[in-house]
Image (cartoon, rainbow, N blue to C red; front, side, top):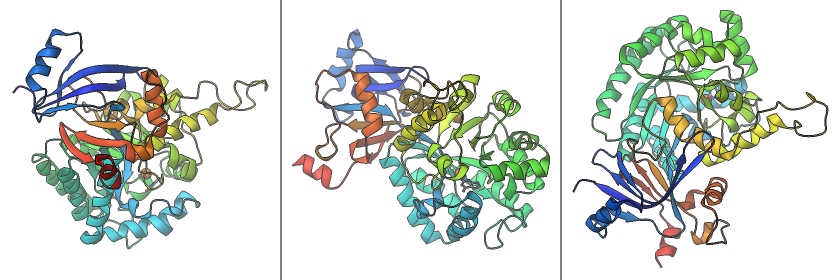
Length: 463
Ligand code: GUN
Ligand code: FE
């Protein structure tokens, strides 16, 4: 048979950043490589031919009433070890949070057993929340960072993983930093090679990522060496950029320039670079992001806690900056991009607050700041894919079959849909606002099922 999997049902995908395309009752034909080879409409002649050939076989999946296909989410910023502290210590400033809570927990990832337990839980949790691709910071430890990539490989998630570099002896605690600059670079290179080798045994791919934690934690030599490694191996690059007032100011004092130009000076802004937060980019930083093809990862929940700031995401996107969405576990407490989609919309509306009132101009809010839920969905899917320069995040021919099947009729998590003829675009928005892990029936990555909802709910349903 020509196709390895066929789905019949209704899917939603971004047509543009503002517009959703409804692909109603189509056939989705997936090839052996896990790519969408053909999408066939009911009125096409081929539709019945394919139905006759595949219908009733094990390769054929027909969605039931109330079930819909969405692209899997792309989480552009996850600190995997911080899953162990998600939801704690959210009330203190970033600097204190890093030193009092975060570095101590990350230092525990020298223990492979602890790392295995946390990373296994996290990758499964993200899949259960519909995240099919994740860009991870691990820790400074090469071995357990590699273990995270192995767990992604094994569970079928498309993981992009970085061994974190923190070599500055002044800025990082003795118990948690690279031994020295030379070993930080050597271990990063070994890590890149090991992940590239691991990738060969996976269908969905796992990727090594050059990962200076942020400028304050790295020496100039390390930043320069990392820029060279990124170029040598053409890897992705990730870091934090202009996140909070103290961090932004720290970089300005050290380099007399903003993070963006400092990072670029070390060769760290590249087509495959993703910079988290970026709350305080000025006009020339924005131009530099566009020129270099660097993407911004918007972390709206985390920003509300640690950056005390709202990213002007609508303005950046209108200028042409690539944008994706990130949970920033555990600066963001939630593993769900659904939660971050909602927060991105809400935060953007706060930024616009006051504009459409009778208040005199400029008293409150910035015009043009608010985004729609469709745009936030775009950032969580297609925008994330563009940011990583990978064919993911869209339900479209030549893209990967990375999807989540949403069941709106799960008895204990029924969505508020009461009209059998409700507009599909309205149902789509209800899914974004109301879907919980209970509603995520199955998750597929690169044409392979990687998660099926389990437990009591599934048992109840099967009677
Ligand atoms: N800046 C440097 N490290 C971190 C981190 O772990 N989380 C956040 N939110 N910001 C950082
Ligand atoms: Fe972060």
